[in-house]
Length: 186
Image (cartoon, rainbow, N blue to C red; front, side, top):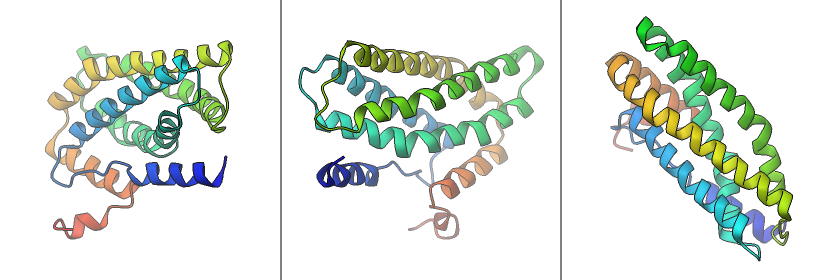
């Protein structure tokens, strides 16, 4: 990667979303899902482009390297365990969480491959690489549909005010924004 591309990636990384101290952390997770859908659209653009698209490439790299790991931690460390603790047997949350964790493991394997494909600013993707990019975006969309349709609505019903406060605290800490907890006017 060139120094110019490195700088673009750092600038894109600097635009990483921050958690609004007054917001419900489930709303923030939903916003991350919207950002991920936008990234999927950029990946689709990359699969169709006949020449490299630096904006799309750098945006995808920034999301995959900075935002996605924090988002997955929000779910794995906070959301899923809280859902297991609060859900009723008829919610069958264990099956839901197992499916989502399997998706996360798949993502952990595929994301570095996608990032490797996108590192070279001048690389034009061949048919196999385009297929790999398209499959990654499709899997991500299916995962988001499942989370948005099942997990988030159920979380809004099952999680307590205390759960949400703990989740928000943990999310802020993961992002290095825990100073906002002491001084919400920052």
